[in-house]
Length: 148
Image 1 (cartoon, rainbow, N blue to C red):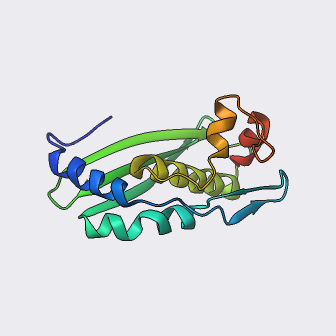
Image 2: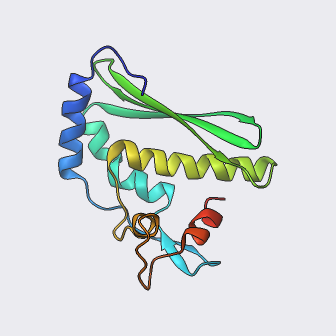
C-alpha cells in the first residue's frame, strides 16, 4: 500500500477515531434481495466528524474505465502531511455512465469503510463471505449482484 515516509501521526489519529466509532446505519434497501445495507452517506455519517476532529481527511478519485473495470484511488491524509492510499477496481456490468457511477459509489463506500474501520450494525457481507448464512444474510450471488 503506497504511503508517506512516516505514518506515525496518521496511525495515532486513526486509532483515536476507531476507538470512538459507532456502526454505520443500514438505512438503504435493496428491493431485489429484500435486504438493507449501509449506504455511502451512512458510512460518512459514522466517521466524518471523528476524522475531522483528529486531523484526518479522505480523498477519493475515480480512475479510468479500462477493460470492463472501473478504478478508484482512496487516500487517507493527516494534517501533518502523512498519508496512505490504495487503488481498487471492480467490474462494470453495464458499460455506460450509470454503470460506471454505480461502480464508483460502491467502491467509495467499501473503501471508506475499510480505511476507517466502519462496519454496519449487522455485518451480513462478512458472514456471507465466510460462508455463514443467517436469515438476514444474503448469498454470495446476491452480494455480487448488489455491487452494481
